[in-house]
Every structure is written in structure tokens, then in C-alpha cells.
Image (cartoon, rainbow, N blue to C red; front, side, top):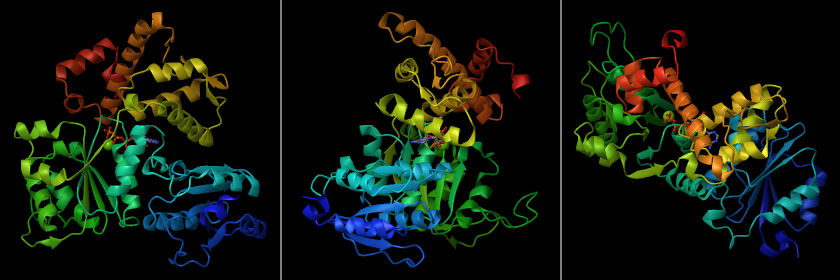
Length: 445
Ligand SMILES: Nc1ncnc2c1ncn2[C@@H]1O[C@H](COP(=O)(O)OP(=O)(O)OP(=O)(O)O)[C@@H](O)[C@H]1O
Ligand SMILES: [Mg+2]
């Protein structure tokens, strides 16, 4: 018996199916509802919770994605299949990210057969547990699936959220994904790195100032909280927020109001606050560097981004994802990874997490002479034989250390104090590491 018949499930086709596709599905026993972007003006078909969506991205891609997103708002767990056409209409990274959440992506010329097979593979209601829900972020590990589940649960809840995790684990990406899944999507998403703002400008950046509020304030300035009204403010490195700004943030969270510097008029703002930290905020509270009441306000919902080394199975998936994305923009010989490269990647501890993996893959894609990327292209010359493993990992760690310090220096605009603070080491250590890895700061700058 056909799945459509057996379960009474229906297909919501987002786009315009050909006559053959439409009737082909009906003939195969699927109840088929069409959400044609040209006609569907915000109204979604009534499909119930057991529907499967087909996002037809072959023609009106933007509109199809918009309708898909609305449908997923109403039915957060709805499985969906992406039809990308020929050549695959996957021009930009955002689309890739969206497609990563698809149950299956069908490239190439329209094939009713492939579609029917894909539909048949999707588990029925009883089988579709949360664990089976497609992942929102690239990856299929248990850790990333659990994270996706929490993002889905937290998106519609209007409470602050604290995202924790090591550097490069995707904290900002998770925050953006959550914003896109919330009813605030389409409204501003303001990402502010609290650690990068000079202490004397933080308040003005966040809350704005009136003309003449301080020397140099020659005109009124609207802060991020005001300009993101209706949307989401993402405060990265919240642990670096100075104490006076923490007090004002608490006020936003408690009363939903701000005051521009130099004004005593309260302004109502409607923003959801998401915050991220790679430092231990509990410790900062214990040391008096972070307000305890603010910590409890922010810590209502919490997302922990797993380090890459805990994401068993995701490393190769992400590596291929970054390589494919790179190949779309640049013609490279490299198509995939050799078995040795895969072993090396899986054995490496990835101190810089997903960002480091992306950087290594991009560099390897540029320098690889072959269709298969080798461990040395990735600068991971790890021989996976157990006897060699320790030494090789040692050298891989050394090169990762060099990479991490160079990345951090760049991110800190080569300011040693800033870099030391980010790495949570002393300035002397930063200088020592530069010397150890023969990094000439003057040249790098
Ligand atoms: N699951 C993922 N799929 C694709 N790209 C990812 C994923 N997770 C992270 N990335 C990429 O890795 C890089 C680092 O991600 P992001 O900036 O979100 O990390 P972060 O935790 O905020 O880092 P930091 O602590 O340094 O601020 C970005 O370029 C992001 O696009
Ligand atoms: Mg970040």
C-alpha cells in the first residue's frame, strides 16, 4: 500500500507543480495541497500536523523560502523535501543553511519517481519523534539534533536566552537561526560584540545618546536596542559588558524600556535579548564582575553549543559542506577528501571548532592539486596508525595553536591586550606564543 494511502498524510507543494507532478502524486495516493507563491498571500493551506512539505525552489526561490518559513512557524516539526532543479539553484550560503534542514534535497531534472521515493522514506507520525526531526544546523550528530530540538522549542518563547560554548562553535549562527524561526523574523537582528566596544562607548552604542550628552556628541544617536525594535538583539561576549551597561540591560529585561544617554525620558522597546558567552558567567558572578540578578534574568533558557570534538559524525559532513560551498564560488580541482584526510580530521581535537574546520577546508581547497584533499593540504599530517598517533597529534595541535593565535590576533585587530583577554592568558603569554610560532607582529599587522 502506498504511504499516502496508509497514513492519510498530505503533501503541501510550495511552488507550482507541473501537471504531471500534481496528478502523479494524487494518483500515487497523496492528498496534495498547493501553496503557489503567486497566489498565496500569507494564507497557508490547512494541512494539519501530519503533512510533508515540498519546497519547489526551481523557479520562485525567495517566495518559496518565505512560505516554507511561515509553514514551519505554524508546524515546527514538519518534514520537508527541497527540489532545487538543474543546475542546482544553491547560489548562496543562506540557502545552503536552509537546505541543511531538509529531510532530503532532490537536485537535477524533475523526477516524480525520486520524489515519491523520498516521500516514502519520511517516517509517519508515530515514528516521527523529536530525535528524527531534521537538524537545523549542518550536522547529524546526536548533540546537534538535541540542539536543533531546543532551538525549535525556544524560538517561539519570548524569554531571554543564554548561549554558551567555545569559540567558533556556532553561537551566533544558532542565535540567527532562532531569530529566523521566531515570529520576529523579517524584523532586525542586531548582533553586537560587547567585547569589541570601547568601554566609554558601550552605553551610547546600545542605548543611544542625545545631542550634547557628552563631549563629542554633536548629534542625537539611536542605539541598537531602539533601532532593533520589534526584532532581536544578540549580545555576543556578554561577560565583557561593563557594570553600568549591565544595570541598563537589566532594566530593558525587566521593564522593556531604555533611556538615551543625556535624557531621562523612558522609551519603550520591544526586543528579545539573546546573549552569548565563551567565559564562565557563574565564575564572573562569583568574582563580582557580572551582576547576579542580570545573570539569572538571562539564564532562563540556555543553549550549549557542543564543541566539534563532541559532534561525532559531523566533521566530515561539515567539511564537505564547506568544500561544496567554496566550489560554488571558485573553480577548484578538489572535490572531496581522501580516506587519510578523513581519518586526520576525525582524530584532530579542533580547538577552533567549526570556524577552524572551515578555514582549513578553504585553504586546502585552494592549494590541493588533486581531486582528493590530502591530510597535508589540511595541514593535518596525522598518520592514523596508533603507534604514530600521539606524535602526529602533537604536531597537529601545534599547528592548531598557531592558527588559533593568528585568528585571535586578527579578530583583536592585533591588539595584544585584547587578544590576551579573549584567549584568557596574560599578555606575556601572547608574546611568548608569537615568538614560539615565529609570528612577526609588525608584518602581520
Ligand atoms: N553548523 C554550521 N554549519 C555551517 N557553518 C557553521 C556551523 N556552525 C558554525 N558555522 C560557521 O562557523 C563560523 C563560526 O560560527 P559563529 O560565528 O556562529 O561561532 P561563535 O561561537 O559565535 O564564535 P565566537 O565565539 O568566536 O564568537 C561561522 O563562519 C559560521 O558560519
Ligand atoms: Mg560569536
